[in-house]
View 1: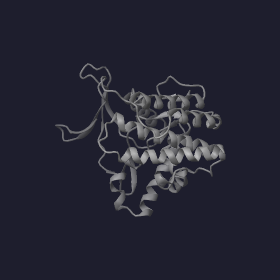
View 2 (view 1 turned 120 degrees about the horizontal axis):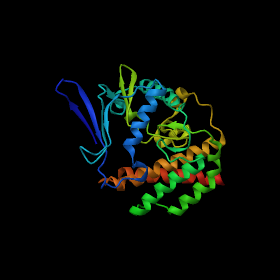
View 3 (view 1 turned 90 degrees about the vertical axis):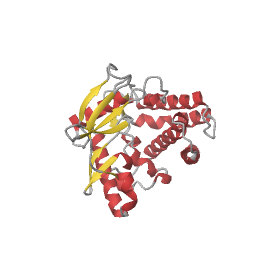
View 4 (view 1 turned 45 degrees about the vertical axis):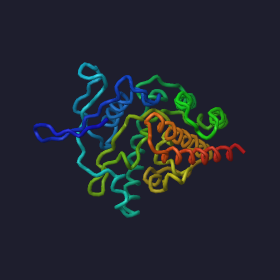
Length: 285
C-alpha cells in the first residue's frame, strides 16, 4: 500500500508498506520491498534516471509487522492518467524518452541472472525457466483456468528455450516500466516509480518492447526508436514472444490473488495468451 502524507512542516512524503506476512502473494512478489529498495540504490548510484529519494526504510518489523519506507513525494502528473489528453505526437515523445531511460537502466550489470538480492542463476535460460515454473505453480495452486493445459504451456516454453541461451550477460531489467509508472511535468519524465519487479536478465524483456510481438499492447515504434534498438533477429523475436507469454500469464493469474471482482483483465489476458501461444506454435512449425 502507498499513502501520501503531509508532515507538520508542510512537506509531503509517500509511505509504502509491504503486505503483512500472513497475506499470500505470488512467488515473484515475495520480498518485493527489498527488491525495490535495492533497485532504487542501483539506479541512483549508476545512472542519471530520475527516481524519488528514499528518506527512511525499516525492515526490522519492530514498529509494524511489515517492511516499509518513506520516499519523496513527486508533484507531477501520472502519464497514464493524462494520456487521453495528449496528442499522438506528445505521447510518442514521452514513449521515446522512456526508451532512452530504459536503455540507460539496462546498462547496469549484475553478477548472476535472477533476483537483485539473489539467489542467482549462471544462465538466463535457468533463471527464466525458474520464473515461468514459479508462476505456473502459483496458478496451479490456486486452480486458475488458463484456457489451456499448464503442461501445454510448459511444452511450448521448452520447445523454444534454446533462444534464451543467446543472452550471456545479466543486465538490470525494470520490467514494469510503463506509462502508469512515469511521472511527467512540462513535457519531461521527472520520475519513474514502482521498482519492486526488477531483476537481472535480458533487456529485451522490458515492457516497452511488448507490442513489437503483440499489437494488442499498442505500438512500440517510438519506444524502440528512443531505445535505439536495431531490427530484431529471429532469436530475439522468439525470446520476445516467450516474454509476452510470461507477462500475460502474470496478468491472468494475479486476478485470482488480487480477488478481482470483474473478469475484464482475465478475459483480455486469456485472449492474449491464445495469441501468443499461436505465435510460438507457428514459429515451431
